[in-house]
Amino acid sequence: MLANRTTQAILFSLLALGLFDGMGLIIKHLSPNYGAAELSAYRNLCGLIPAGLVLWFSQDWHDRGRIVRVRQWRLALMRGAILTFAQYFFYLSLGLLSFATASTITYANALFMTALAVPLLGEQVGWVRWSAVLIGFVGVIMVVGPGQDTFTPAALLPLAAAACYALTGVTARMIDQEVPGALINLYSSGVAAVGSLILAVTTTGFSPLQSTSDLGWILGMGLIGGTAVLFLIFAYRMTEQSNLAPFSYFGIPLAFLLGWLFFDEQPWSELFPGALLIAAGGLLIIWRERRLRQNAQTTTSSAT
Image 1: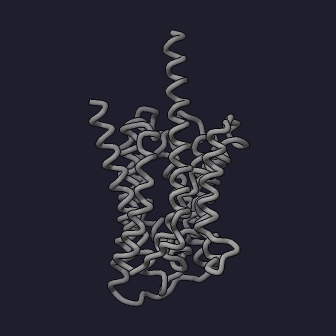
Image 2 (image 1 turned 180 degrees about the vertical axis):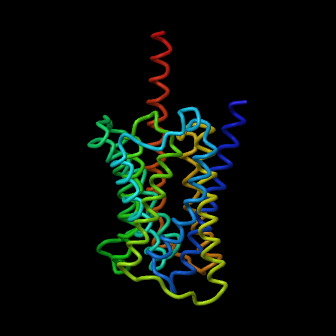
Image 3 (image 1 turned 90 degrees about the horizontal axis):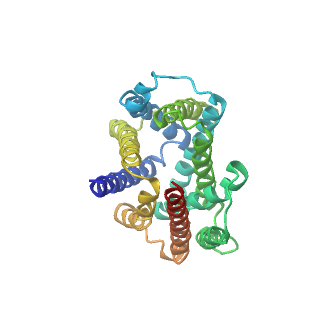
């Protein structure tokens, strides 16, 4: 039964991965006519609906008396503000870089999370995980390409997005364990919606709709992104994150395939072999964390 739930969770996570890529394709399609901040605003406003639904149908939230106040509310609000910039940097990069390149660089978030866990969470990171971080960052440098003729400062945008996404992950772990994840998600979605609206107004503003079909694309972007979040939350509830993390790297070849199919992009020289090193570094971190968790469980079982 447990294996079956894990399999279902993996399928949900892969479906979420495909939906996130679908959302990214729409963002890239709309980028020539609409600013990254306004697309982020549309996405976050639509995202409030699934965030609210997840909270309402969360049994954990109901069991805890439907609390809406978080003791570390400042941290929860700050997490939403960081998410605002993470989305803005990533959406902006989709309009400037090839789809696969922008998507691949953001996978450095696993490396950033490991590095940030030391000062923010006080975690002890051994030589295996530091080696994994180093391998992954070498891959990032190869993809970003500083010093090469093909280098563009726009390649730093998805790297900044990866750092911000990693920071949202680490700060979520700093919030009290008894706070339902769905409530944290709603806080972040609400702040990101407000933040992206402010960002849009103060940067590019809101462009008039170019066509009625664009309205459909914008609504589709929000619904697809919101649905992806739902599937990802379902997956995380069904099994441990360490069981799902390795499959996230399927996103790298998938992004390359989608970029080739929809935009005729073939950034072989940009991505390889750097993308392989990013994936290798991330997978090594995941493997090491799983081993540490298994050893801790074995020690606990022996002690009892």
